[in-house]
Length: 383
Image (tube, rainbow, N blue to C red; front, side, top):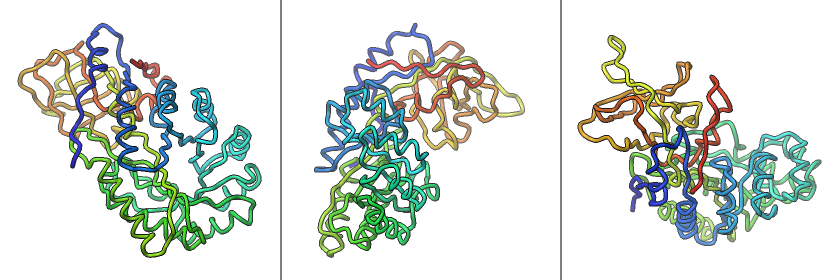
C-alpha cells in the first residue's frame, strides 16, 4: 500500500478561507498530528515514539503529543524547556544530539534527562563526568542511500568503534542501553531500515547487549508530490529484521524506539504565501519567474538542492497552466526554490494572488531566519 499526496484537512481549509490574513504564515492543525500519531503507533506496535522536536517546536504541537503519550527527541536546552513547559515528564526525553557542550550535558542531567545519544569517545567522557549514571545509546553509522537529505559522515560511529563505545560506557559509570541510527530524512526505502537494523543489532550483540534499546531514528517519508510507502510497510520491514535477528540468536529481544518528526507534522501544515511579482526574463529563461513573499529564509530551507518538492495550490485561480521558476523575496541569489523541479501554475497568475505550499508543517517555521534582509520570522497559527 502506498500513501498518495494528502488533501488539506477541513480545519485547515476553513482557516485558509480568510484571504485577508497577512502573509506569509504557517497554519497547523493538531487534529492531523493526532491522526498521524495513531497511524504510526499502529504501524510500529509496542514501540516508544519520541517526537523529533526540531521538526516543529510549537507549544501546542508539543502539548498535543504529550496528551497522546509521546516522548521527545531533543537537541538542546531550549527544546528541553519547551517540552517540560508543555507538561512532558523528563523521563520521556532523550537528548539525541551527540554534539553538545559539557555545560549542556550537565544542565540536561540536572533537569532530569537520563537518556543520551553519543557517537564519540570525547562525548562519552563528557557524559561520564557531567551525567553520571545516565543511559546511553550509541549512534551507529549506516547507509542513508534513498533519502532526500543525507547525513552520512556527520554523525555516527562505524560498527567497530560503536562496539568499543558501548563497552567503555559501563566502565565509565554509565549504562549502555542500546543502539540508534538514522537512515536519512525522507527515506523512501524500507530496505534501508532493514540493513540498518541488522547492522545495529550486530553491534549491540558484539558489545554483550542481549535486550538492547533499538532506536531506529526518524526519516519516515511524507507524500509530497509523489506517493510513498505507507508507515505499515516500514513497520513490517523493521519487525521482520528484528525477528530475523532474534531467530538467529543475535539478540533475545529489543525495546523498539522511533523518532518521527516530518511523518507526524508535515501534513498538518500549510504555508500560505502571496505572489509579489510575475516576471518574464527575456534571454535568461523562457519560463515565467514567480516571486513569493516567502522563500529559502522564511521557512523554505528544505528547498535547498530542491530536496523537498512541496505540493502547490493557487486559491481562486484555474484554467491553463504554464511552467514557472519559483523564487523567494530576498536579494540572495540562492533564494530560488524550484528551478529544476517542474512547476506549472495558472497563466492568469498575477501579483497579489495567494500560493499555498501544502505538507509544510515540518522544518519550516523552525528553519526560518530571524531577520535576513529585514524579513521577520514566519508567523505561525494553530487552529
